Length: 305
Image (cartoon, rainbow, N blue to C red):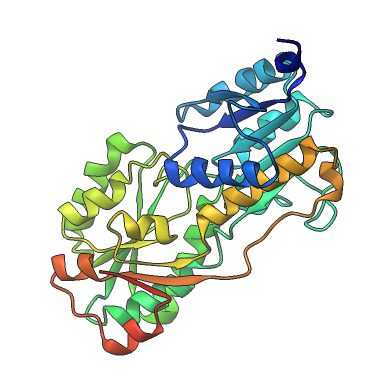
């Protein structure tokens, strides 16, 4: 019992329930550093269930529990709540935005303070996805961006998508959904507007909980889903271009382990992706009656059949 009392405690603060694709690599990163949840590491999980106004109280609860490290994930909001709750307990984040502009760290190389973590690039890749879509589906001239208007990356992604659509000669419709209950209405709108494909924006609403309902609904309406990462394509998306999202969460687990061993968050640079993969789901293409050119298939980093 004495040994158990002395082992570190990890507080996990998330915007919603963590999908397997996120929590499994995170635990793998912990284990790389010698920590096994339920073995030599105790973990306390606190999820806001997409009710972001609950995060400050949940963060305060973890601080009161005197956890050794807080892992804040799902968007910058959990990390902000944790940062507001404590300036001494180390905080590690994992999400898809810019932690400098989001006010979490001073810089990528020198985070300063008690916060560090890993991020995949959630913006600045929409234009690349749209260009690939234009090449893959030359007959499609009307597209939609499915976005959570309350999301932290919404404005930047809408701006990027509009610029990309204009340069590619596409008509873009921005379709909003702030919860999964609004997905049917969103896809009915796309269907009415004769949208030929939709791009899902980077937001925890779209797949972070592992349900991938936006992909399921898109396929049900016959609208090809253009996705952020491989995890979405494995769930039925037509293709994705982006970083390996699971690697972001693994790196966060590695950082938590390093901090538990005594390293300081201020001395751990923000981990950013160095590789971006183009993944095509050929099974989905066939289901939608789409022919993918051999040239595009040859350029893909992975083809799911």
